[in-house]
Image 1 (cartoon, rainbow, N blue to C red):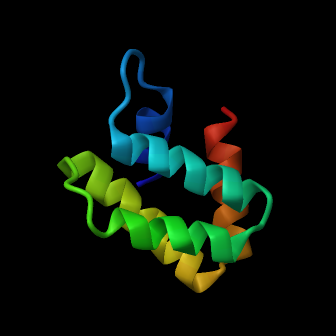
Image 2 (cartoon, rainbow, N blue to C red):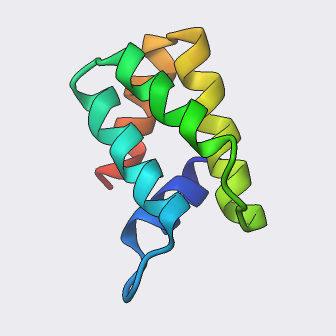
Length: 81
């Protein structure tokens, strides 16, 4: 799922609303603002998403709900490549 997150945040041109929200979630996660990231997840529940957006969303949602620091660090390492 990490590759979908990276794909969505690096796409060129006009970005869709779910991709923008995914970027906001990542910004909150970078600051370790778990509660704020969770609030964006709740907003995204009502959005219509493409399959790749939905998969990236589910990945981030699970990460936020589990507060798994190791998985978060793994994601950052992957995104920085």
